[in-house]
Length: 279
Length: 330
Image 1 (cartoon, rainbow over the protein chains, first blue to last red):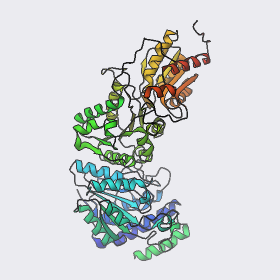
Image 2 (image 1 turned 90 degrees about the horizontal axis):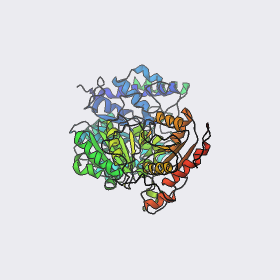
Image 3 (image 1 turned 90 degrees about the vertical axis):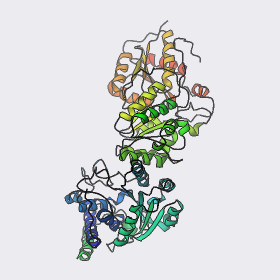
Image 4 (image 1 turned 30 degrees about the vertical axis):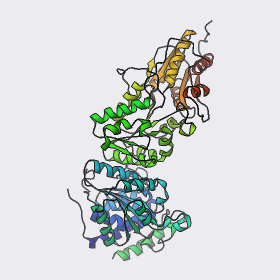
């Protein structure tokens, strides 16, 4: 089985292409969640092009690593990454959120069977990931399960039920990535319910914790590779400090862009920035 | 109110929860993919029977039902056949979003058991009594919903769950259940069991109410009223053909369930009959309330779920029958 591993120097241009796709697809859909898609770009690029053991030509490979996007509203970044990796036809991106499209408004395994899970009701991905990690452990297989959660999402109680279980059972074949962009739908975490200190919370639940700049691809690759190696006999939480709306100046750090699509002229302005940057 | 008939004596057997544990152990021996989860009630749900025999395939999750349902979903997505159990009220009410999102919506092949259903758990009281789980489980698209009446029915249905591809829920009880069947009886998901072929009224029941329905049938027969009893062990997919036949041949239906009348067996049967052959109906069940502590028999009596209430309901529905006027026996 082949695993696509791009040189780290090639990851940045991939990230730039994916940002352009995200803006285009949400603009075309007329609705969606740009902020939390743009914040997770480098993390998904590091996973799909350097860290995950997978084979886009064989998506049901039993020994593939699993990735669950628990923060399902961020699916544009996942769809764009899957297209870039060759899992789905790039032309499909223009059908996001349209009737009959496999690219549903939130990830839907019925419509897109290559997804590992259907998500969209926040808080559930780590429990699903635990089930997968337990299955791997039972069968003595060495594939790894990655789950990405939002920082607002970890306000959900189920997250901490799951964190307690995985830490106690030392599920070192499970990694949770926290997209720590400091915002949620209604505003900034600090004004709603601040989960800080996040690293200390996971450590207290017996997790190995790595804190990184989630827009630095080298740091993303390094942390996710360490997590995948499972060297600590604990599950790993990668706390990735990110910027919501990263890459589009008028979206960055503005909670207004959590779940609003850019209008035509805003798409053009965003693409202008991203395309200049991509050159 | 007392049942005077001696034609149907209730001989008590094992509780349906015990049948669940026994069937899990049987499944464990033949299918290495079967795994079992519980949320700190394994001794009560009887999943402990599996745990003792197959400790490596048993996951004790702790008191965290939402996490348990999600883990079951992840195990199923990885090719296992998980059976996850807790008290019905905790499994359904605390795990509902997870049952919907991580199991029903992606149509994951995971199985669930809610024990201590209804009010017959007795002394522990209403916080532990599930009177809404049938309605909740039926609200999960694509789920199979099973309510066994006795140990043999329960054991067989657990085996059918393992064979079925897709999500299933089975409701079991704490109290000993009357023996209705034998180990040789066959059960199929979605196929009601008919007892007798009376044509005056059809009594459609599930769970412990099947035993009471058979008592009521005997009592009615003493009074010259011929009733048939349908053991509707599958609430979803409902045996629409059996309901239509009962409606057509009897012209009146009484339903009986240990569940709120809102969204339970009666509601499902009424919808089915209304679509095929509408007939007058009466409904025996819990009426818009939560019960209380007490001995199981006292509670079943106080909340109107025993045989005499089914008899009364049958007598209430008979004069409402249309067509050739029903003439009460002298």
